[in-house]
Amino acid sequence: RKRVMKISTGSKQFDTILGGGFQTMSISEVFGEFRCGKTQLAHTMSVIAQLPKDLGGAEGKVAYIGMSLIIDQMDAMLTANADTEGTFRPERIAQIAERFGVDPETAQDNITYARAVNSEHQMELLNKVAEYFVGNEYRLLIIDSIMALFRVDYTGRGELNERQQKLNQFLSKLTHVAEALTLLCLVEFNVAVLMTNQVQSDPGASALFAGADGRKPVGGHILAHASATRILLRKGRGEERVAKIQDSPDMPEKEATYIITNGGIND
Ligand code: ADP
Ligand code: MG
Image 1: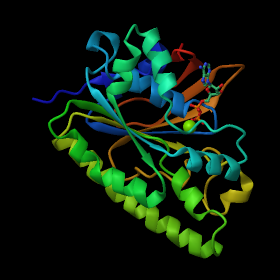
Image 2: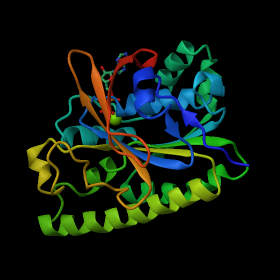
Image 3: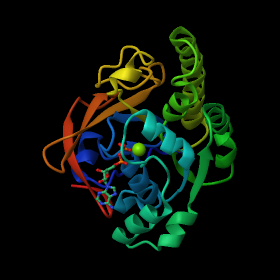
Image 4: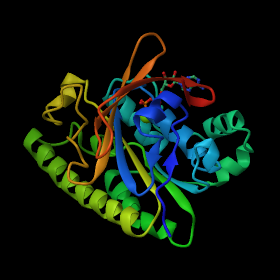
């Protein structure tokens, strides 16, 4: 029988506003500007998900859909971001594993990583993801980041209204996939789904992603129709970062601070 499990973020404060962590059998969207820690959170949780329950884990495997390095580099150029930090980094997994006293290689081996090369490929991977889960104890699915590939595929290409139309088509497909994932997680698999998304702060690109004002996720709330928790991340004072629940079926709209360390997300 399936039972909801909660996967820790690595920060006690962050866990508290989530009611213990990100839940299995549910789908969450974490969104925020660059460097607020979306990818670091994804890496941290990829290790913690493997840990025993008393350490905040779910004793399971992780599926991680990231993007290829070239896509990451193109996205960094498009968004005038100095660093490329969007890709999956096994060496970060090893560092985070050490914090929790886990063998780095074992931690890496328990993460199935798929690298999307374009937005269509990402959609294919999302559609196929259930196949990974059959007969395996997966407890966490990461999608980092849900809109970057679309931006690389379509920014600067064609007329604005044409791109807007493509975006609408993409979002509509994404919504269907998100709904299918939610159903799968509710009915079939005991998996927590965590998607990351950016907020649009580049005014040049904001025309494409209409409605974005720096506090809304790119493309609007992808999971608007799915049962979901949405969390806004932002930079706080100094090295501090702030997580705020924006929408949750069962938790109040509270804030928590966290930091990013060599061992991942922490208090
Ligand atoms: P996002 O995905 O939201 O753009 P990231 O998750 O990539 O952001 O976080 C980037 C931030 O994480 C940067 O500020 C970077 O300095 C910090 N960071 C990355 N690795 C480490 C580390 N090993 N120790 C401390 N901070 C780190
Ligand atoms: Mg990132």
